[in-house]
Length: 166
Image (cartoon, rainbow, N blue to C red; front, top):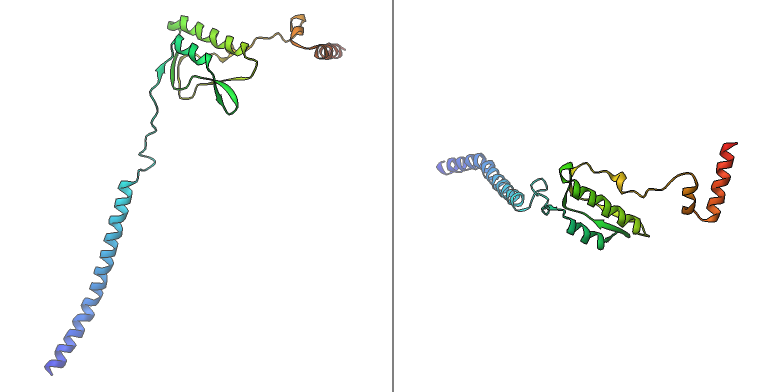
C-alpha cells in the first residue's frame, strides 16, 4: 500500500510540477528571446539616433567665389556653380562683398553659352538673396530687342506686332 501511495503521490506531484517545468522552459526561451532582441536593438543604430554628418559651413570669400566660378561642376549634365555648404554673407553691412558677389555671378552667367546652374545646397545665406539681380537683362520690345533675334524671328515679331495693333 505504501508503494501505491508513494506512486500516487509521485503522480500527483508530477502533475502539479510538470506545468511548472513547462512554464520554466517557456520563461527560459522568452528570456533568451528578450536578451537577443535587446542585443540587436543596442548594436544596430536607429535612424532616429543617427545624426546626419554635415560638414561645417565655410564663409564664402571673394577668392573662394572666383575659384568656384572658374571651375563649375557637372550635375546631372548641367554645368553648375558649386556654392554648397557655405556661409554667404549678403547683409547690408557687407555691401562690398554683396555687390561683388552679384557682379561676378551675373558676369559668369552672361558669358556662358550653355545653361549654368547655381547649387546653394546646405548653404546659409545671411541677408536678402535677390535672384533677380543674377538674371540676364533683355529688352522685351522696341528696336533694342531686335539684335537678339535672327532675321526670321524679327520678321515674325513685326508681323505679330502689326496683328496685335489691328
